[in-house]
Amino acid sequence: MRIIETIAKLRAAIAEWRRGNPGGTVGFVPTMGYLHDGHASLIRRSAAENGLTVVSVFVNPLQFGPNEDFDRYPRDPERDRRVAKAAGCDLLFAPAVTEMYPRPAAARVVIRELTDRLCGASRPGHFDGVGTVVTKLLHIVMPDSAYFGMKDAQQVAVIERMVEDLNFPVRIVPCETVREPDGLAMSSRNVYLNAEERRQAVILHETLKLAEEIFAEPGMTPGRLMAAMREHIRRAPLADTDYAEVLTWPDLQPPEEKPFGEMPPGSRFIAALAVRFGRTRLIDNRLLEIRTPAGKE
Ligand code: AMP
Image (cartoon, rainbow, N blue to C red; front, side, top):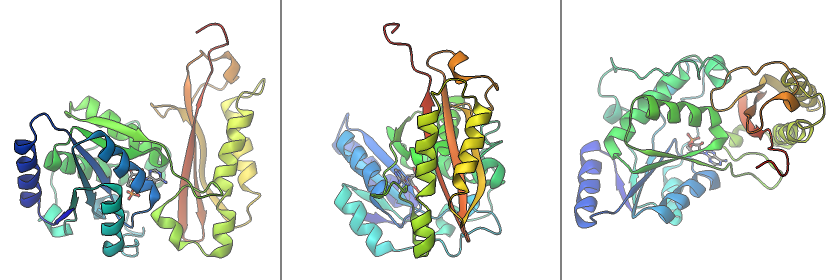
């Protein structure tokens, strides 16, 4: 595995690989580092599907708000190298902020509508920062496929829409969320939690499991489901709910307030949560789908 810090060297290395491997495909996994098994699963998937796997580690200042955790975001370049290499990364791109933003960017990528709610509402400007950095990285790497975790489902929806609306020549591959044994979604931010917060953090997963179970109950509506989710989170005394919402997937719009049972089979929704424990904000989600009645495939 090669570690590369400049855009010019990364482009040269990828171009050289493409010359030596005609028809070979390049997979790309963008990350903010402090790699865990969730990241590793994306890297393994890319390595299994492509001849060359590029991983970026870049804590992107553009996607953090002024009072967010940019300065204290966990960093461990040594471990990142070990995890990336073991998972099958070929080129690890770790640019400095000045390499990615040599001067303040006048051009930004703004994705509307899908960013009005959930993390887009709680973190103003966040998805402009994500859209902009992902655009830059895709233009630098020019991969055939790029791998994103469904833990950040709104990010997946936003990137898929950006790529579609703006005709980026790349396949976006959403990957399943990897969890700790008790169900907590793996996240670099989990290290911020103290022991009691960590114990209670399983409430996100439990609330989504509940949502999945009661979603199909007769008479269940989006409003009732959201109320049940908010109620359930209160069982964890340290949990402070930022949002607990049910929206249409992948458009992320409020569904009509009528029983799910009256909605067309195949309709998809997302139950999404953001919950604070002290200064730590955790997110998780579950996709819900109205099943086609048996025998009516
Ligand atoms: P981050 O470093 O948090 O920006 O994440 C980089 C990529 O890894 C994003 O596409 C995330 O959605 C994905 N990711 C983070 N945590 C997980 C997880 N627990 N399971 C699967 N993918 C994840």
